[in-house]
Image 1 (cartoon, each protein chain N blue to C red):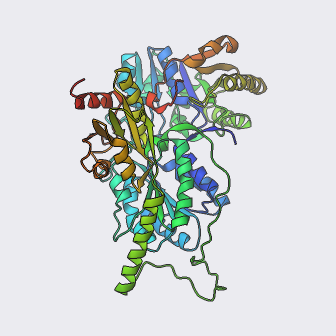
Image 2: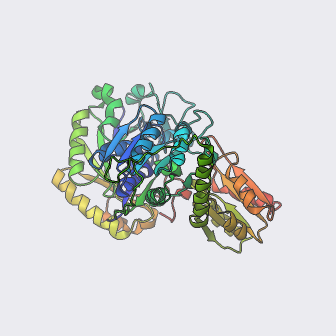
Image 3: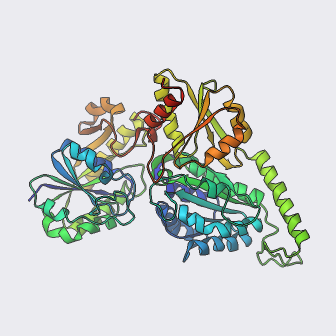
Length: 217
Length: 350
């Protein structure tokens, strides 16, 4: 049985980017993109690029269509759950996003579930997270293993925003009795690593082209 | 209100509600589904939300609501906008304020779901019958999209005319920091509305049928006078970077952001370029573009199409400056380096 990590969270918090970054750090591995809700900015669009870096992508089973309204859940997911490589599963936001996993509950008993949160997204902070956590854990039948704090405002992020959200998230995790696995930084804030302790630094964004950002991240 | 991170589609929907939209009629199509989804969740508290049985039904519901005095809106994407054209002509003919958001995708026909700009012609020229014009606003980011939706309601009410906000799939699907203007957009009196108010002593009838040719010609002349006023007052554009550059890009929407990255790359290679970005596609900034292009070696029009706005660019320039085109289609989005190479090629391989 492979080591399985499920990345989930509310819609738009940065789950897919985190899944990509985590996969690149843990290559060789398999990244299963099972988001059947969002049509744009998907890891499955970058299958060849990932494979060159030792990350096998499981996307839609209709291989030549990377962008679809109706992505077909790939049959490769089942074998990957029993493979030798670590498996990272990137789900769509909300409990609907977990539905493709409903048929694999038995295989996911030992999986780890991480929830990505972002203070600046609606339904992705405070009490809303508690509700999401509860819904997701019950749906999958596994406890939440940790929180990934991805609070940011893209190129409008400041040091104060990061430090304040990190402290707030530490308090929330304590209340929820869940470990804060990491706080995400972009390379502009690499110096904050010492203050944060458990930071993960994104050198470059995988799913966002540089021209989509006005300033350096 | 402080900034939050929002997807373009949901930000547009929230901005529309904040601008006083109280009647929304839509039909799902990718890549604008989050917009209608947001409306289905929040509009019932503010007014009417109907998921219509088709795009045709939705635009005709907009006609009905606008005729009754509502701030009415619909949204769709390229093939859906095509289906709405008849209703848009009727709205224009009946002088009804209506806001139509289109989050464009690749075509023709069903095409694909990725971003494209092949709808410039159908937005600015229209597919409906008759002599009519629709104001077309083209945002290049999520914040600007929210501001343009607000402006669209203002312009629609002011001129009693349909307004299209022409976004593209990237803007609809992209997350960006945004702050929605929640200040109330003042209501403009609509004494012409067919709102059941009989105290005026007569019944208001909203119609685009004029069987008397003299009256219909007069109606067309009045519409033309209105469009003249719109062309005089509402042209909007951005001219950025060094105005004395040797090369000028013309781009709207998402490509204008790619152009900005290309300009920085060109600068590093000693080539000075600037950007002219039409923010209103109708009225098109013909005179401003011609003036900005003077003294340039050439203008490069960059579009996610096989060449549509380039026709307006050439009309603007009247042959005064060479105009070249670079485009990708089908959902393929060009990268800054492609534009850099295109400029270098036109400069003779510099």
